[in-house]
Picture 1 (cartoon, rainbow, N blue to C red):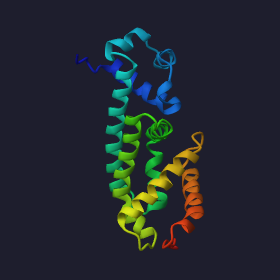
Picture 2 (spheres, one colour; picture 1 turned 30 degrees about the vertical axis):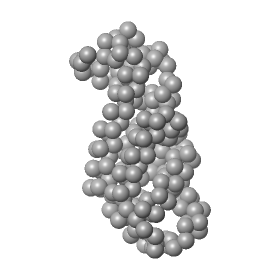
Picture 3 (cartoon, helix red, strand yellow; picture 1 turned 45 degrees about the vertical axis):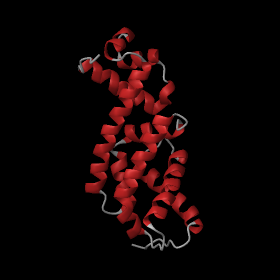
Picture 4 (cartoon, rainbow, N blue to C red; picture 1 turned 135 degrees about the vertical axis):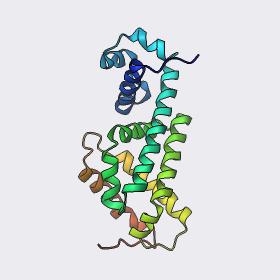
Amino acid sequence: MMKTKSKKYQKWLTTAYKEFACNGPDFSLNALAAKAKLPRATLYYHFDDKEHLLAELVKHHKSIIEVYHNDISNNVKVLIPDLYKVMFKYKDALLFHYQLLKNCHIKQFCELYRGSNERSLIILLPLIKEQFYSDKSDREIIQFYHTLTDTWYTRLDVNNLSVESMVALAMEILESTLGLYQGNKVLCN
């Protein structure tokens, strides 16, 4: 049954998105209602159950990721720091994405995490190749960067999402792993 997407629906969705970003899919509906400042019973006017709400959150994240991909396509001219400046604008989405990885044992979360990362890396591939010399194929570079991305997310300090801290983490990971990926050299600017 199609239910109206009212202001209350948007409030539930936005609040649930932030709650998922903080706590993953195991968030409490009572805590969600308290944060939304709405009676819990009104949740069921808009969503059949928590699974339906989670499905809507996945759709919502996909739409944010589309906007993010357009943003990185248009505004990332140099991989580091431009990528992290764009990411900073999407802090809630970044945290949501972090939770997708943490809950990758759930198929739909893992598929969304991997699929959106794949799209990001395809967009960023020319900049990655510009930043590093490599005799590796595009596919090998993308696979390597999937590993770097996973490492970056697992080591992310969710309490410090400044551009500087995200860049520092990326640089630390790159410096410690580039030796494992022969053929790469960091270009000096």
